[in-house]
Length: 326
Image (cartoon, rainbow, N blue to C red):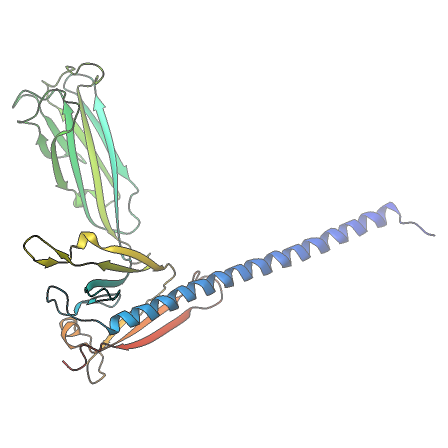
């Protein structure tokens, strides 16, 4: 019986290794494709369920508990209306929208331990989109008890904002004093902002242990940005009516409960389109609020537009029953 030579054995091993590598690559590719397809199907199912619920709720839109007209916002990618969506006998304010606005906040502190000195902080790389607004709340503590002598000058990017604790502060309380809030939108638009707290020449190392500082400052920076070019999250917000002690009904915006419906909406066209009683499309915004009798909802779903399968489109029409005869 003829045996394999060493060269034949090496060639056989090499061919076998290549074959196994090819098979493993095919299996991995198939797995990735199947995984992606499965994720895409989940995203489509989420969007389908969302659009079914949305259409059902929009169909029942009616007056708010405070007498507000059924439709409050009618934008291309945001629709706010009133409706008893949970059938509890109370009308909620409901908002469906593409998440186009993001908010954030950061806090930093600094301190100094020498006479009449300063300390500083910087905030950077906080923006993902375009800045809408920015604010900072600044508080201080330290050797600040002498009115008009012991105080702290505050600067943003080298420009003076204000003077804190010129009067009304105390020495070394261990708590924050002199708090003020400033609009710093113009300073923060370049995605970088620096603050400096400069103690007056009278601010000295008078704070006893365990404080051990001359002056310290806290900077609570917050911002709001437009991320419409980046956002693909379709969300739902709900506000329950609130009755105050005097019986007045309101819908406080800070009590909105927001939930995520799907993260993969790729709409360039409008999500919402509005039609009058004759089926004519309404493009003028004020008319959308008072003349809308029917709507079309359109969602484009794709978890990764850079690879197949192609975008999946969902579309549905809904008639606002309580408005069709108005």
